[in-house]
Image (cartoon, rainbow, N blue to C red; front, side):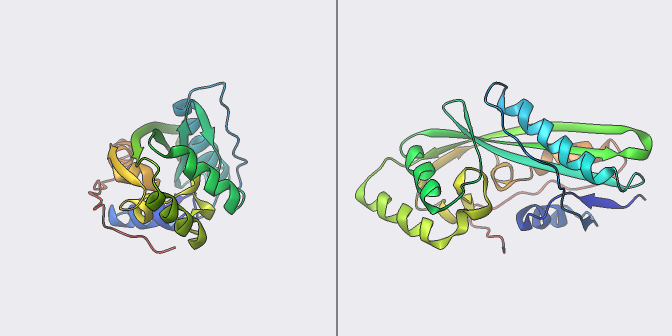
Length: 206
């Protein structure tokens, strides 16, 4: 079987892929990610996941490379990872009482066979309305620094009970790797992988 490479340094993606029963190595991609509000969030997420996978596959043509990218959107605006705590706070404050979308694209590439497979999954995240308690909890979360490497400025597993009302979709999509989608793509290359049922209480080591 070909070597499988995850083109991401995200500990959350590594955790989920390992739980799928896949043996893999990690090689972070150097692909330059750029969001684009002039196109759909789904289209951009797939483009970025393909870009990450292609970047690594260029150096490992015999390997199967998995790329993934997560984008948070609100009001048709695609959100970057926050640059600092002030931006993280502004992002979180903008969600209060509203719905945002989290879209994760996945790409699976085998360069030697010129095979490129990709797909996208979406989860809607509904945030609690602003109250003094919610504002305090938001401040507390920003102080933790957990937002630093996360699209949209938050990790759902750490604000599920404090800032989020409910979600419509799968937790693993928000965490950064939709395992049902990835299992389907891998199966097209003859690789058996099990989708993961993610508990809302499950935490991921960073």
